[in-house]
Amino acid sequence: MTLYNIKMSKTIRCKNNLGEYEEVPIEKISFRPSAYGFVQDGDKIITLTNKGNGKVWFPGGGLNLGEKMEDGLKREIQEEAGIDVTVEKIVLVKENFFYYKPLDEAYHAFLFFYLCKPVSTELVADGLVDDEESEKPRWTKISDIKIEDLSDLADDIYPVLNKLRTT
Image 1: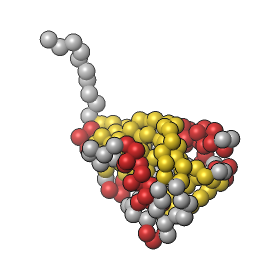
Image 2: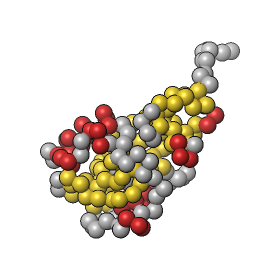
Image 3: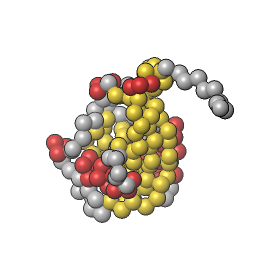
């Protein structure tokens, strides 16, 4: 017995890494849980530069199968910024349909953003960042980050950054 007659779309509208929308075939889309860190030290936060669009992003990324969220976040921050952190609390959860043009990959992503505190503050040298898409880890004054600087999900991330300015 069928309780629901669900008509599935053959494509999903995804935002690409250049901020444009594209229709992507559903069979090309993968689930991607991911964790990102707002690593805060006083009035500064670690930012990265997104290679694909030159915009600001934050350390983190996709989790490996069987990897706990906080462990994956710590691994990603170590790879991209070269430091260890203490994960304090979750501050934002977002669902996102994303298409990454350079690799022709699409994701139904679940992004978990955590507030983190650094164990040390010396960031990895630019040439040693272990990531395909992120580069140039920097301590950036939170007040210097403008909404138009953000790579993605700016309308959701910017209010969180504003709250961090006052803490």
